[in-house]
Image (cartoon, rainbow over all chains, first blue to last red; front, top):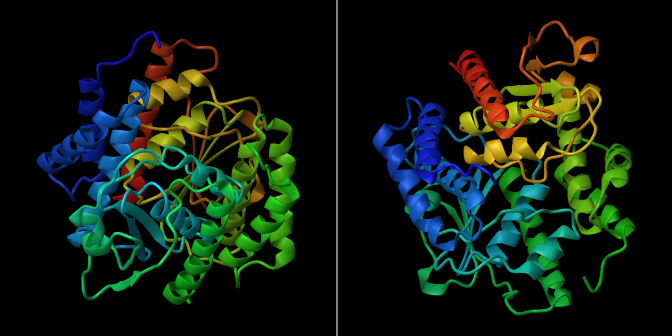
Length: 207
Length: 207
């Protein structure tokens, strides 16, 4: 790339853009805090500088939307479903992608980890690609108060005592095998187990 | 990849999944037609076999949603904006990505080309990445009746007589320079021109 912009310029522009997108919803300081939190989360894990502004923008946007929903500053148009596991690298990413795939935009889906670490499991990416589902540019994300409070349905998998529990939401803990370190054949079974569970969940939430 | 699935299996599964997602909206034959049309569009341009089911699934999903909206089979939750140019490789892709970035989910955006050809202009990808906007896995898409009829707002750029015109929608033709073959500095100016236009459009559509 011949003229890589100074990332500080990119973030100044991002603050302006998000300020426009959330005009009347968030003040400039709240926007700046969200961008800064996204930078702190993502800069240490960035491997390709070019993509960093894209990841920071997406994370900041998602957190602002969750916060706006959690605080009742914007109306939810569809039910919000949150999938949580420990690392947000396997099960919760798969479940969220399947729910998106199967819901025809009648729900909005998020995922997060109680201890987000590492990269998305490549075997998970492969098993989902076989079903026509992309996990492009997904990355492990932390479980913030906003994403939990914005959710109408919280599904936890394997995070034990660090899984969130909030009364008043649809809340379930799913016993699903961890795909970490498993070969493709096993991950396919986990994918199909998750698809059955997601299908049944969507039926309950939507029908 | 050790065990690449037969694509016919992937498409059988996709038909089943979309049949679930659109239960009560589309019959099995309509789903099968959408999957077949997406295959015919995308197979000739596929370079990496693994990604083909992902692209086919996305294209079929988008066309089914557009058709469901166009025929009044599902309610629109937010205004639908369609950007059209000739190849769907530059201007309309940029405008759609900017509108998505700036709208905080208060609109849904599509883009299409009157003669979709080639790949997304890589300089366009770079100019958007600087603003924190991803064009990952975007590809030129045809202007189908469904996407036009599903739209509340249609913006055309440079397609002349082959641009669609339907009375009863917000309809505008924008005079925006073509980024094809232009260096990054020029594409940045085009991006900023489009951002101003999109910002002003969103204000009118939403405020």
